[in-house]
Every structure is written in structure tokens, then in C-alpha cells.
Length: 174
Image (tube, rainbow, N blue to C red; front, top):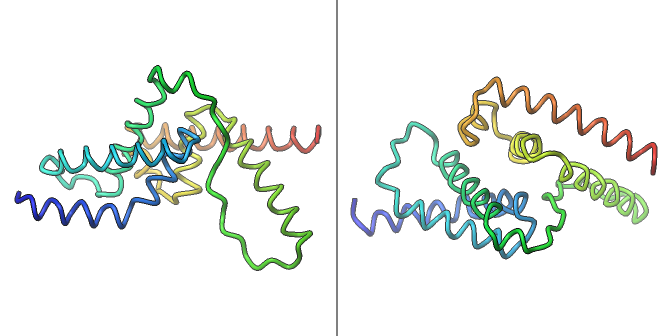
């Protein structure tokens, strides 16, 4: 494969998936700059390994897999263990705002939900995020996470149960 063709494929992938991969990385590392660095490393790996892409998977799921692996490597690293982790998940798009009061209440609720989701064990948080925030199908999540579809379904079901319990507890104890 010619370098000019690889360059064009990389540029297209960066434009199409850059922001999405950054949000994905952010859910793992909870730091904007680190997430951007990880995505940059993911694109470098993509560029280096583009000739091995067999198109058995979609480009999107292959890039997700690379990015998730980069995130997991970072989270295992010594440098990460020395950093304080902050909470964040992409804020869902809001409809029309009816009033400042409703907007503040909605933002507060969204922040509480984000905090609760981020406190789930990683195995549940991962599938919930990919399913609800990135709208991946069960099969795509299985491919991205190297799990079976049944394992993804189980983790999704258990994650939703844990999320429901935690939300009820948060509501009960304010």
C-alpha cells in the first residue's frame, strides 16, 4: 500500500472517528489531554498496522478496539497510578430548555447520573457506555471488548441492575 493512500485513509479516519474516540478514551482515563494523547497513539498504531486490517470487522470497531487497548495499557501504567482520577461522561444532548430552573435541575441530575455510572465496576461501565452513549450493538461491543455476545448481554443486564440500585440509593439518601 502506498504512503499517500495510507495518509488519505488515516486522515479520513481521524475526521470521521477522532471526536468519538476521544470521548471513548475520556471515559476510561477521565482527563481530556490524556484522552487526546491516547487517541493520537491509537491513530499512530492504526497507521502502522493499516496493512493488517482484514475488514472482518468494521473500521469503527477496529479503532475502538485499538483505543480501548491503549486506554487499558495506560490505566495499568505506573504513571496513571500516580494521578487523581476525575469523573466525566459525555453530556447527553438536551432538548429545548424551558427555563433556567429546569436547566439547572436537569444539569444536576445528569451530573449525578454520570457520577453513578462512573462508580460502576469497569466491566459494567464499559458495556453500558458503549451501548447507551455510543449506540453500539451487542455484537459490536463483543467485537470491541473481545467478549462473547452472551457475556456482553449479561454484563449489560447486571450493569443496568447495579445502576438502578445505585440510583435508588442516591435518591433515598439524597
